[in-house]
Length: 418
Ligand SMILES: Cc1cc2nc3c(=O)[nH]c(=O)nc-3n(C[C@H](O)[C@H](O)[C@H](O)COP(=O)(O)OP(=O)(O)OC[C@H]3O[C@@H](n4cnc5c(N)ncnc54)[C@H](O)[C@@H]3O)c2cc1C
Image (cartoon, rainbow, N blue to C red; front, top):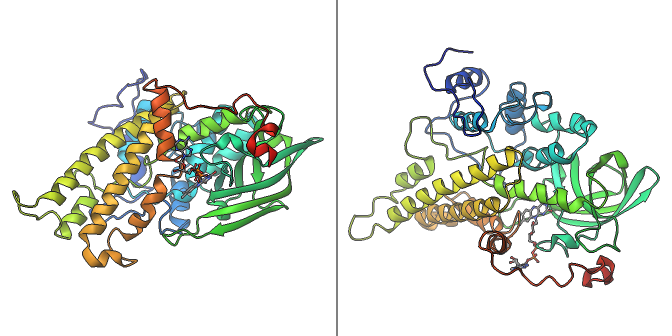
């Protein structure tokens, strides 16, 4: 490692580190390209079908544990402290990090869940191929009758010796057609109240009885699917957590999903030392920031207001993600982070698209893909309304929603009777 003039990692979590920004740059310079003003980033799940760039980036960074530094070094991380992780994240922003959307469930959600709830055997089998990009994962939670009310999941898992047989339907399963594995929430005991009779499994997407049918979205992507499961067999060794503990595992996964929205991977494209993110530079190139002062400076004001909100959103997302990585759950901070990230994504997309004038209506127009993707941001990972409910109840202490079916056996609830 190089000798550095820069300060070692801050010790926010009380761990002193000798790793410096120059050490990290020395390691990454041989592996990745530096960003320039010309670097443009694809948007999460919008218009990108490229698996190769992300796979090459993860394969290049896995030996050093640079992408998931807090994971154990034998599983593709480098046992980093939260402070080191922050430092590595800030240096990584100087490099071209491709759209990691196809790999995001494994890296951001399944990995942390396996570290929290998985057996040693499961961690040995699945973590490294996630970190290296070799195996893609999807999240089979939502069903036609279980979205916001996720505890209503009906896909059933019946024990049969040392295997489970799964039957039912999932929907909106992002990345299913690329995935080798899914983390799947299933009902194992319909006689328990809805939150209690659930168990989490890993299912092989190429197993007999698993049928993936892609759905097309209005941004023309077909990245999410309906998944029909008809008697698919899952060994008991692939159960994550105890029988009946599926809700707890699901909450770990969802809190990481919310906290992770908008964090590492992608970014604003600003090169090191540049004070202007590329999206603002693009607006300037369109002439959108030239409105004369005093008459109609509305777009410039809007851009600056988005920039300020975006920075607050990144820092909140970072805080939530750090809370998660330091061993706890991101909790309601993840909901706040998601609301802010979604709001600034939408405002940025709409301002860019409006500024392109009539050309913005064309498929390759400035901000078009982001504009037609933006509404889905308020739905995926839990809707804006659900995030506000969480904040209302858990941060503001407002009265909870009426939950009439909480203590009723699921079999006797409205869905269970259908
Ligand atoms: C692009 C995209 C990708 C997705 N990827 C995945 C994935 O990979 N895996 C997966 O499992 N799921 C995925 N989903 C599904 C997503 O989690 C659900 O769509 C979401 O939780 C909402 O559920 P729903 O669509 O059933 O809507 P519903 O729950 O039926 O909600 C309909 C409307 O009612 C509102 N509402 C519902 N309950 C309340 C309440 N209690 N208080 C206030 N308002 C309420 C909602 O906010 C919404 O506006 C994805 C969705 C999208 C759009």
